[in-house]
Image 1 (cartoon, rainbow, N blue to C red):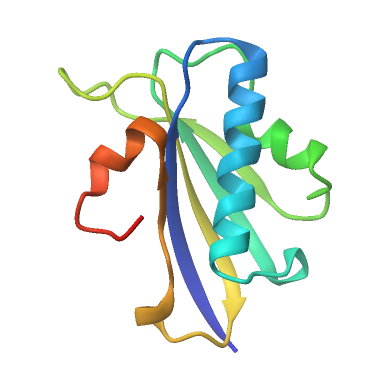
Image 2 (cartoon, rainbow, N blue to C red):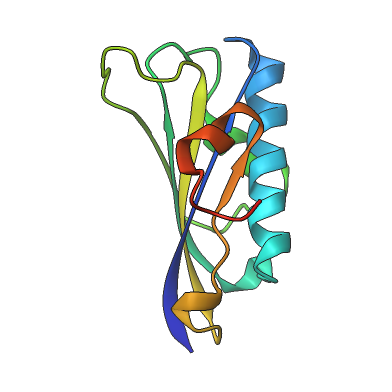
Length: 120
């Protein structure tokens, strides 16, 4: 098995605890599903949030999903002028037999505009 990295992002509606928890859960679920990743094959996940999202840690949503033994880290994206607001991102490291070309990065909602080169 190889170690693969999977990227993803979602734009949430507001800086609200429920919006962050719901958006993060949707993103994590989509990443695992689209890449047929068993949670046991997760190595770690790094979450980032734009500076305008402060109401909750995205990693807490992953914990609520049962990912209690996976190392998780939250950090803030750099504040680039004019960048898309209210975006949660993740970088998941997984053990996978899939070749790199078959990894499906996931960009949901408004965040799909960040990677128009990827199939949705």
